[in-house]
Image (cartoon, rainbow, N blue to C red; front, side, top):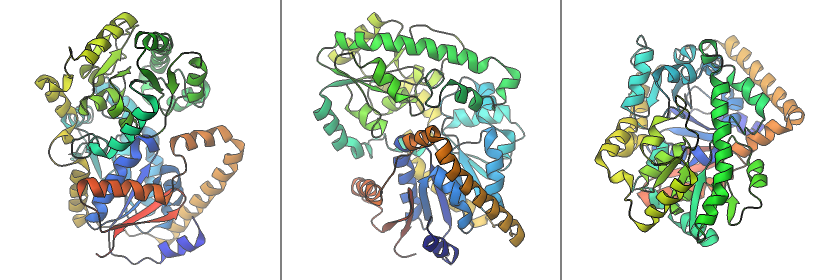
Length: 467
């Protein structure tokens, strides 16, 4: 952030409440959080939207506001305390909290009790997640609001046309295609096996189940090998289709390109939001992946492919909302029935729809973005920023400057991690953000008074012209 921007922020006297919306993984989160930013700005907030890495590095420069974090895992507690030392209020949702094995594993994997004590409000995907959290943390104050997540706002009929043109372009480029979504970070992590194990060793579940991640990694390794074998066979069985393989954002994409470079009509791509690929696909294939749920919400058929079933390590929801195949022959047979129309889309099943609504509150009714802003509005009316001692703020700023210097040094010493960050949030221009915002404005006929400006690389400010 430039010095000019720093002084502009420091001298700000705008009375609008300030909201920070960090984005870790661009292709998965940006459009959803942009919609939330637009709804908030329209409601009178000043919103800072941008790369999580940049916002965390620069949040000390801003006057007190509300910071929405993407999780409440155990490693968030220190960051929350630092954020609060700057006078900010921390609220959160769990980006990964839609799918979980069971409430106990959800607690040990996703719920850091020290982190939650630093959070003033938490937004749940649906009643099922809220009940699971409350069953594991019965003494938790009443801070959970069932809102849904803005990611699924983009899958509803009102907004689905956002990706219509890009989906048309994808079909023009690739022809008819089948989308294969891989989700094997344990077996193919971008940073390598050692870094991945170090990352997950911080989770409390290791204390109770020391072999948890090792066993889960074996499941991923077996499933990955099944997919590597399955994909060429799928291409052979559907000669009129291209097979698009889309790796998980945390995976090593180059390995997939190497593994599949000899397979005819198979292409590996992680460009753009996954929902535009889902919308353009004739059907999708996945393993324990949220894209199976996203496909359900978009009326696109999904097949859960699980050749080497291992009990205890399967995510219930994406499998409940998908067709199933336990071998390549069955996968081909189910795929052909989908293409012929013999199998209708599973979202038309009322029982399945009920299951989905228990997990995702915002599939119907107000958007999750609107529910969240409404909750923030009510909270802002009673919130009082804590008095901030000058010395405490100076100490926190000194720490922030240390982090800034350290990150710049590490950028050269750890080029692979920098590449990983760039893969998750590549450079984004003001023109790109404005184009996306204009699409929302056109589709929903809203947000015309919201103005967007760039305040730093990958960081943008949004507010209405007049307040």
